Amino acid sequence: MALVHLDALYHVALRLTRNRAEAEDVVQEAFLRAFRSFHRFNPGTNCRAWLFTILRNVFLNRVRTQGREVLEAEMGGVDQAEVMADTHVGANPEEQFLQTVLHGDVDRAFAMLPLAFREAVLLVDIEGLTYREVAEIVGCPIGTVMSRLSRGRALLRRALVRFAREHGYVKEGE
Amino acid sequence: MNCSDIRARLHAYVDGELTVSDIAEVDGHCVGCPECAALVSAEREFRELLRRQPRDAAPSELRARILGRVRRDAAFATGRRWLLLPTVAMAAAIVAAVLLPARTPPPLVADLVDKHIAYAQIERPAELPSTNPREVAEWFQSKAGMRVTVPDYSPSGIQLTGARLAEAHERKAAYLLYEKGRTLLSVFMVPISASEPALPGRRVSYRDHDYVAYEQKGYRTVSWSDGQAVYGLVSMLDYDALLECAERLRAERARQTRL
Image 1 (cartoon, one colour):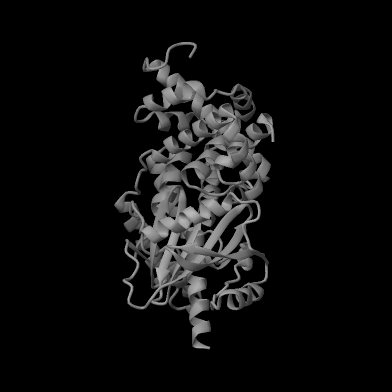
Image 2 (spheres, chains in turn green, yellow):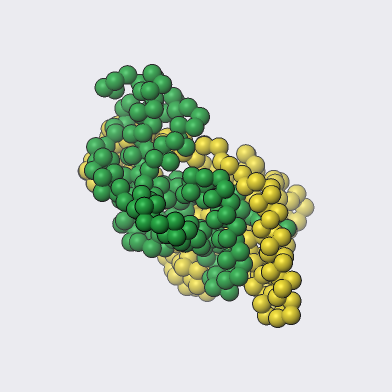
């Protein structure tokens, strides 16, 4: 017996919690819940997406019990981040900085994203879900998924360009 | 479409979320507009970068712990048989073999992916636009003398949109077109002779059946052979959905053959 989606769930849980012990707890709880409520799964729909929905609920419940501060840190910061992401990082310096992204840079950049953007980029770009599936998991309209995705990607880019500058690969002003 | 239309649709285009006709418009625009073409390729490269990132596998202790808990739960429920049923069904759905697609697909599968991409560019890819499986099956019968099984995936939100006769490996093939939202699903049936070897490639087991799964040019494929034909599914849909569709087609085919 092998748990097919365990690695995918663990990976998402790590990105959500940013903590290995937390991620393990969240994944375990999510799997047990999934087994117990499997009669609610609609066969033929995406099983992984269904598991992600459960995982996300488990994670948010835990965050809520940890108190207001943690919750605000996770849910807030969106407005500010949206303003920051408004300046589009053009395609030109792109080709250069993509070559210079060091191991761990993407992890670092991901960890800095507010939750709403982090999960949208994670589910679409890394887990390959459709906009509709993400909208169902997150419980928001598809348009919101699209805007979070494009802003999330822009924020990631900005962070990566900044790291590239820190490493000295991209010069100031490029 | 002008440049700002393209830019508004950039992410949806790269994510494969546009309609077939919108995809064709973006492609058409990019041929004559190097700026937009550069944006598209930068966006693609960025996504590639994200996908290339190493992924953390779940620790084996976690796996063992979860399986232990699940077994204990199941044992606890043995007194109440009906409670055990969901666990058994779950075992089939999420406790199947691990999918590890190999690098290069068999030539026939690569050919089907190219067909899928090519037809996705056409405004009206179906020769026979139809949402009716029976009508499509009759069309293949009368047009090419082919007995084609046309599965109905509409309960899963995957809608039949039409059919066409295609060629794969210089053979006449039945091509069924489906859409889930804006994601296309191509289902091919390529007749083979009984003496042809089985489909090469790495096997994936799903609900006790063997399939070959490959990722090619960003598309996922699931294929199998029943000795009479090779069946191939190509889409951006994930493997869960593809394997589920494959299972249903296989079951429907077996049912029709028995009749």
